[in-house]
Amino acid sequence: MRTTFNAISIGQLADIDTNEGNFTAENASALVGMTFGGPGAALVNDFVEVSAVGNVGGFYNMNNSPNDQFRVDGGAAQTFDGTSVYSATVTFVDGTTGTYSAVVFQDVNGNAYLAPEFSDNADQRLLNSKPIQSVSLDRLLGNQFSGLNAAREEWDFVPCFVKGTRIITQGGEIAVEDLVPGDMVLTMDHGFRPLRWIGQRTVSGTGALAPVRFEAGALGNDVPLMVSPHHRMMLSGWRVEMHFGEIEALVPAISLVNGETIRQISGGDVTYVHLLFDCHEIIYGGGIPSESFLPGEQGLNSMTEAVQKEIYDLFPELVSEGLHSYGDEARPSLKVQEARLLAG
Image (spheres, helix red, strand yellow):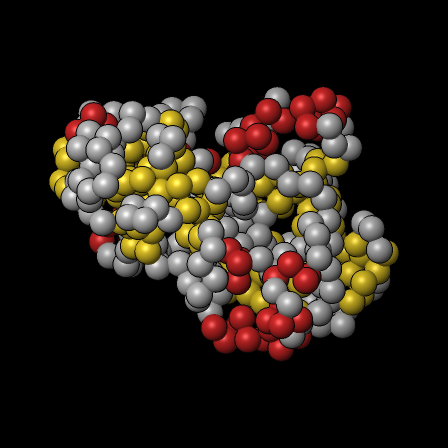
């Protein structure tokens, strides 16, 4: 059962539910007229993962009587407070716009989030069509809700390489889609290690699924490299150490986009390929280090049940002991907002 969903963080705002103990967000109209995001601060970079607290059987509702709790990006528990729905205008990074019904939810400290849609409807297809720059709340549509249905649609954040990427193996560089389980792949920490599983799927390379392209030399790569937006690249150097006290860190590719040598390329279909090892590894694609697939809740939930079964059959301890049994991340990882500090 799904226990997470993705949302867009829009900051700490005025309390929309000022009178506790009922199902009305009395101050919801205070947000009408507000715009979140904009040029140079696109909302596509402000996605967060919302997870349930103490609801292991599934994440279907957050209620404000009694107050349920949730976590954002695995942080401290936050107490759900209220929900409102607005007629909103979404502006994409290419300047085009659209209108949809925006669901806003908030915790008791005023931290507010834009939720994805409940089903794969016209509004969700609009939101997924292109990278989102900003959202403006134009008119209040509803403010009387007992909670928030949390079994919502997903944006795809599975880290993976684009078909054609050359991976360093014991037999030389091989196109990622030509690898097979058992191939010995070079890892940074453990030398050559056998590939346990490879998966791939072809999707429309637009919106949140558009790949990030690193031109030759952008990160020391000898050839151009394309990965999924939230595939994490390994960075090191004085900026990482100065800002985060780490020698090396994993950074989402989307956070490094600079509009010149690193760009998000939208259009046409794209085939993403996932590589899974016995533990989370740093491997070499396009000649530079980045991560292998880490089977966490968010990544697995976005895959089909058949693919999930393949992985669970390979690693039955993920079922019996939980996803934590796979082990730790290969390096400390930075959120998109944190990684922006390293883009200079």
